[in-house]
Figure 1 (tube, rainbow, N blue to C red):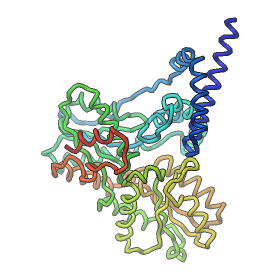
Figure 2 (cartoon, helix red, strand yellow):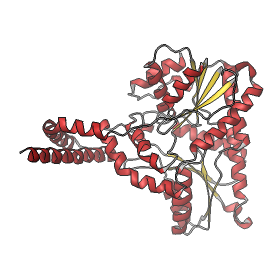
Figure 3 (cartoon, helix red, strand yellow):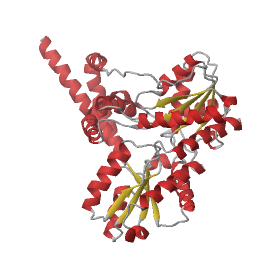
Figure 4 (cartoon, rainbow, N blue to C red):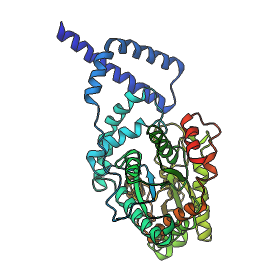
Length: 433
């Protein structure tokens, strides 16, 4: 009888996972009708009543251990730092073994991907997607280089700041990733231990979105609010889409990439500025991202004197729901069909190489899709990485922020008109007032 009961509970648990996954798929593709939702929810309730206790025990035993690591590399500073600069980004797994935890944190983030039954669904989706994503990281060398590039950028930035802005120093950088080590929360704890007086949240997304910078600032707010009273004073560099240093580096990288085309083809090159896409439901809430990306593109083209035809395209769409378009891969195919077969891809919303440049652009689009579409030449402009002009721009952005006395941009104080996330409002109370 005991074996039969255990078998029954085990079968119920498996069936419950299938129902939950079914709901997630319906939710993500936007086709969850009231009838289907009610029917599935009813089934879930019945199964949950039969197996809740066993299921809870099973999940508790199988819960992944999210190991946290040091939030910053060793910095050669003997003096106590006064200003701490927290570089915010999504992050990426440094090695293949880290992929699952990275995906789990990503799917648990309601600011990025709101799901029904999120605490149950996130582990299931992360587990199912892990093998595919692991293979992609293997193809780009076994891990993401984003921490290495961010550290090099930050080291150069701090060296400049300590020389040019001694009145706000000593300065120390911290890396705060949203979904990979070093985590934002760990970085904040280290800043507290170091006795930082002025904490600057410096987003590494030049163009603001609630799904990226907004999510990181919300994470800071939640962590700081849960701690005893902090002596650190927080301000934010929450966007910088048209900074001259940023656009100058992009323009120079485009000029360099043009030289890689055959001389008789350079005038024909079409520039495709590729940025990570967003679901239209996010855009329709009033997210500023698409407008700020477009502003970056326009400023770069001004520096290039509008020398070539160009378009802003969008990559990394997931699922059949409507996202910002046109998609980068669709644009490549369409242009090649029309005979425009010399294309340059410019990763416009990223400050360093990671899987979306090294795998999606370089392998999926340039190598595979380029061959399939009969492109003559598809070349990607270099990412910003450790470009000294970009590192100088980073230092200038922070120095200007420190000298201005402003707590954040004027734009951050304005929530999206259709925002329903209460944390977004509370976060703005912390940074803007």
